[in-house]
Image (cartoon, rainbow, N blue to C red; front, side, top):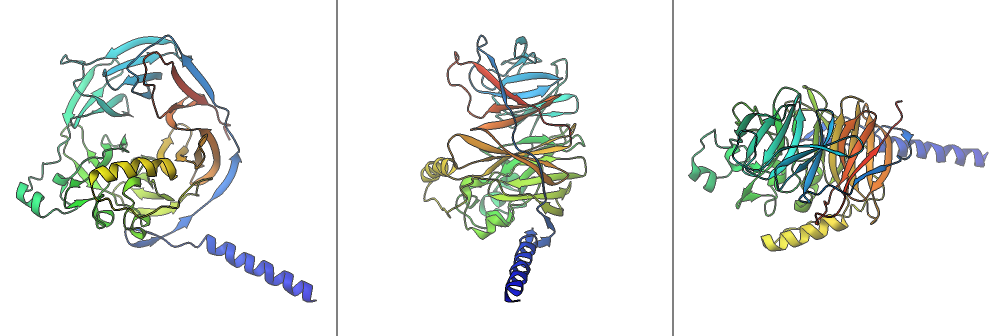
Length: 389
């Protein structure tokens, strides 16, 4: 009888503790929201193939994109677009650096594909919309100053809702769109009296996303950091906030230091949260307030090498899958999570510094984060397939 009683008590305690795990209180912008850490694992691993082109040379700093149903390498230094076949054979070259009608004048910072256009964000707040014929149809400039807040006010009384304080985020910058014709991108504030290096209030008040209509470039701001940044005084070296839109009404907001994903309305209001922590992650984060920019830069490089964090979010509309990339604590592999309908269906190992590129049936593509430094190094692109169900 005693054995049965102990057996019953053990499983009662187990059931209570298991239930507590799923009743974790999650807040967003100060309000408690529902959290559903669902797992329906069906993908144990992916087989990644490497495509290589050893005969084509470029500047060594680039971005891969799938545009016009083609694998395209954007040369960030030379402002050129190199189009390849599915087997990575070079087919054609477009764009280039210069002042002509279909040339670019600034280094390419980021890209996104919006409807039938490739959109490039340049290094001087400039953007270009390029059609499928590789013609630049629209050019514009991000306008952070359209509110016309007086310069003295911005300088002496910085507030988080002053759009004129913001700029594109230096470092973990993402460019995307909201399925309504607007571009969305990462932003931050460099003001000496209100910034992520020295001011704790930044993580409670600052907005994290900018949005524009490409026809006028006037920037609107939205979004906040998650509560984990308030639990620490400073997580300034892990301030990236990856995001991805599901449709015109909903986007997913993630954070480098937060395992939870937040499903939000287009206006930035919370629906609920989901997401499961990655594997083999070093999340023993320390508070760090730098004494100088030089110290911040040095510690940032160290932190991003020793800590683990979630660096990317990408939704593939054609297959309904959400991909989240993260760094592991080992030196050989990183992690790639795969979600369907807010449930984790796979958490697989990928090569170190793997970055998700996109989908071109039947393959998902990836690249290595760190490009070759030498022109003679071969071009590489990674690809893998997933089961349909």
